Image 1 (tube, one colour):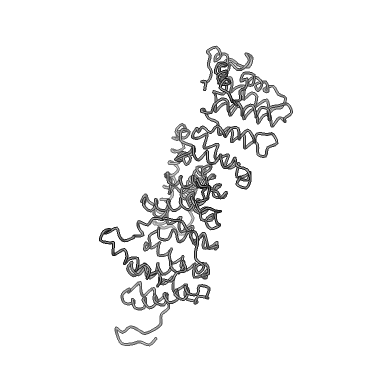
Image 2 (cartoon, helix red, strand yellow):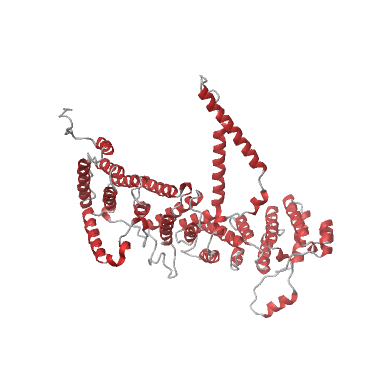
Length: 577
């Protein structure tokens, strides 16, 4: 390279990487070169907006990365805003000049009314709110080359990570790209960025509630676009949900569930987003939300246990022979590791010794379900959905999942959903597929507020289909155990109602309540304690022991035992419903 006079800048053509380094070192001295590259980028983007299917120049991706990196680190906010708007227009298939002209006209019209609005006349992305959810892109944006699109997305992510762009400005754009563009790598990149961005906003105890509220509102609208409203139309659009909206709703619930599992969002608004997804007309979206309510606590406990084990294993690994030559610094380093190991060992032992198991058992098992705003309405909506038949009905796998969620919701909140129990009785046949799961869900749905008539119907159906001599020993044992579990949750079902109350109910007309002879039923099941099949005998003895503790007067004198006889003489029995 030929040299010139002292203090004279050499006239050479630099590579973009070299120019980027020089701009970071001396931004003002190389501002003209930066402006030239920006003008070049504008012309290339204008050409692509006119013919998006054309092959892009080979250095366009490098030029995009250069503009994003330099504008976000070396120059003012105006330069970074111009570059970000240029890239957004390219992703949306718009011309930057036309968009700038439209914005100037809008600002001029707003300026005429600015005297009345004052400071609130300008729109700021910091207070950005979403008014509609549109999961579509123009044809020019769909025809854009995948390498150019990936470079634009990477550049916008870079500018966002450097704090030059507000998070809400990119959320809707990235969701539209993720929903419409069928690019697996791009979708994973955008999804990870959104999750990590929300985590970074709320890390180290610094929560940005305004941003969280707006992001959750947007996700709620995306999921709500697949929910059938009162006019019986999904999202109020009057037709089937398109594939892009289905994919966007699926990613929205995945994102919300992951942020809840990572303990970033654990408030009522997060649960409300997933509760609306339960009512979605898209089976995959509804299934993800139901699985979240059924198993998120277990996943969070597993993550916490895995993290503790990893920390413990890292402390335990001490290599005393990592250095061949022992110096004072190296010896002190190993000594600190040994002290840390001893400290963690003492801490681990003290935590194991002082665990209060009573406090652990008294905690709520399902905190996410506890945060639901309207559990009764949600339960009625899910039951109405699974009762449907025909084209709008769930497949049997989804119906089992919905029953699991519905019965846990009813049992946890002690809801009164009387139409659920006759529906469960339809699936209690001995030939029914996955009948043991149905029995488990039936037990899960029982609580102390359920009327004894509904429980008697369940017990009668189980007895007729499982506890008979024509059934195998395994079926009889399952039936007896199911009856014992149901009666343990609803002890009032063992108390026979007064005959006067029964006569009043019959005189009311139209009574369809099911009643059984509770004493005969209890003694019949207690008789299976001497069955020849071992599993049936164990189930019969378990039933006998349960009734002996709860209401021993139902058993015969020989089955009551010493404790049961004392309770019988004292007149102990469960409270009547």
